[in-house]
Length: 208
Image (cartoon, rainbow, N blue to C red; front, top):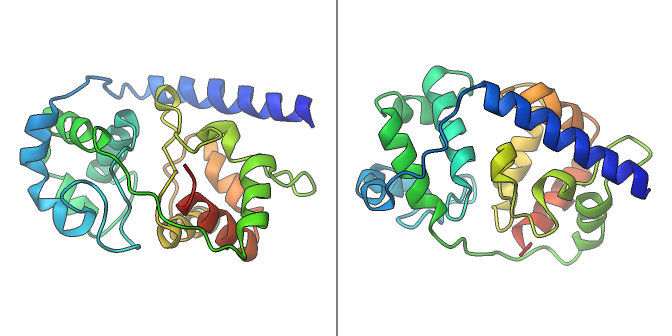
């Protein structure tokens, strides 16, 4: 088990880091104050401080800046398709994207609660994966507390709305979302059952 876990971490980190760097995404720290000013149009869905008002819209507070930068560039280019986000990202220049990322990443995410009935299964998937189907532990890439890995562009997950996590995992599973490097998330999600997705998403919502 330990050897398999270490292998999963090594493949995840080194494989995706190389791809992310090859994309040339900027790692400029950005200006959080400027980002706050630019974020007024984001607030309707994501909240003034990045804690969204609806569980179907992701929390952006505390999300690592490189991940936000990549997703906004992907929305802008069409690499990640979303009818709402594409027109929002289209007019943004590189500096505005970096500034928005700086603002949201500097905010504190509000942690939700996991469904007690789903915690056992959710924790087992997040921390240990599913050896029978080849699903790696989520924490191999996203960290034991769900803080993510900015250098590898792996997002923070802790406190993310369960409904949003479910929607994204199912989108990866169906192929509707395909902007993951090396098909990593599509390959993982394809092996998850609906019950596993619901449980791990609930666990993530309460993770801290």
